[in-house]
Amino acid sequence: MVKAHVQDLASMGRPVRLSTLVHRACGRVLAAFRPRCPYRVGDAVVGDDPFNGRHEGIIMSHRGPAVELGAAAGVFFYDHRHLRRQD
Image (cartoon, rainbow, N blue to C red; front, side):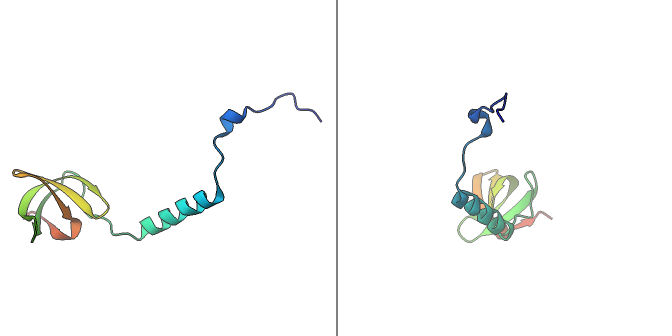
């Protein structure tokens, strides 16, 4: 049978390799087991680290275990395990 309508190949999307799909799936599985930051953007916390010192501030952003802390003295980066909530 002859089809009256032929789908445009440009609307079908780009072809994807099987190895790319497997790599993406593995990345999602590994991301589920990574440590997550218990703090949200805007939370007031105290960061205490031997290299950065102690600073009080507000969380500006976080990506994985790294947290960007906005303090009066500037912006500092901490591991979320070195933070605690303010009293």
